[in-house]
Length: 361
Image (cartoon, rainbow, N blue to C red; front, side):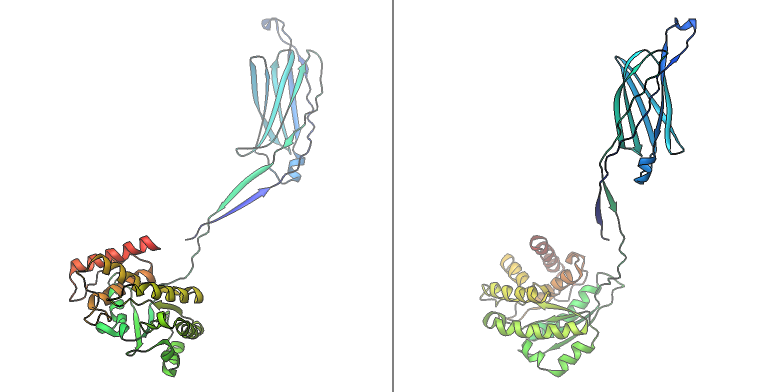
């Protein structure tokens, strides 16, 4: 759900409303000590406001003199506001009139009125229509059909197909969070393959264009992004064009530094993030998570003996990263733990993936 705020400034011009105030003598009985009293009949035409499409909901008149204060609600009918303020002693009274739309004063005016027993006075009252500055909050429920991606094609090499395939581990991890979630995966991999090799393969091109994928994941040869960034970007772009034609979303699988040279992660990160920015594509920061966990806990070995390919724990860590990135969900919700990884190790890896995303996204 998205919330949209629209602010509208209504500019209102000033106009004059002439208010005729009649002050007349009111005869009183002897019980009133023969004291003469006056009254003020009020009639205000609301036509000028009607022309501005302003509908008055309440009109209030008040008068004051010394310690006396009288307020009167005026009746609104026939496009006018009418009423009478009575029982006024002779003298100068201060008159105020306010016109409301709901709780807002949209017009007001004031003047001094002198009440003479037995006489009628006429007063011109200038009513000022206030500038009305308001804000309207429009809440729109966007019922956008934006389902979770469910069909994934992985394109890479031995880093992707190790330990039974990152695609299979990712499917098991994802489906363990929701019994109704069905993930379909395929992979095109081969030892040492580069993105250039994949782009120049007609079978790979056909698989991209005809597979009806939601997401296509690209994994470059492990060292090429560092030592030949230009070639990496060139063929990443060519494959991205095919993926765009297919209607899928390009995602990059950032691989990790060699175990004996963790400093490589800087170059790998830079190259993959450049590709993501250039092509408006998602980058799964697996390599950064490898480095994060490697430096924090040497007891969990993410590499096999060659110091390059992932161990079972490494492939599991990668799948946790894929899940949190692609579904924007906490990796700690994952229930699947592969045989060979202890529950304690799995909890540690899940906690660290989520913490890394909290710290870096």
